[in-house]
Length: 183
Image (tube, rainbow, N blue to C red):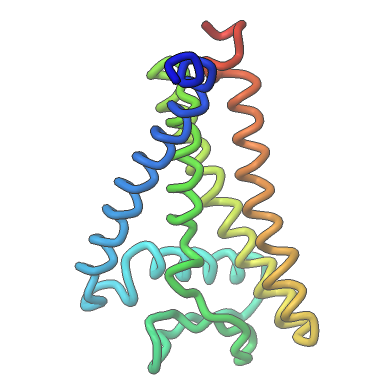
């Protein structure tokens, strides 16, 4: 049994580290959501911020855009040229994806400084790509509403999760302790 444990020590360490970090960050985020009552920022700070920044990006691109608090659910309505095109819900704020990304990087940690900097910069990249994803999705839904299903369930998850995968692969190949040239 000990030989088997030693053989798979790095795999077991990865799984335990990943699950521990993921659990702690997810629990922390859940507490944040539970205590965000929507009184100052509706529905919560990060979702509100993403909606406002998406609105600003759309206006920068020349669209007449607006955001309005949804009256029936905790989300922000994104409107282009007086046409409701999308809802920005809690799942659109990229925090869950960032938690997944950070958990993986922690499980493949390298030196503390490079790990921390990569977690921070990767999280910013994911956040920015997510904003661009929402803006492109909104423009796509405005111009091609009949493609709603393909845009929302195939193309745009591919963008955000594809970016996370590329960041993970870059990390493992360049900076993690699993790469012998980084030890």
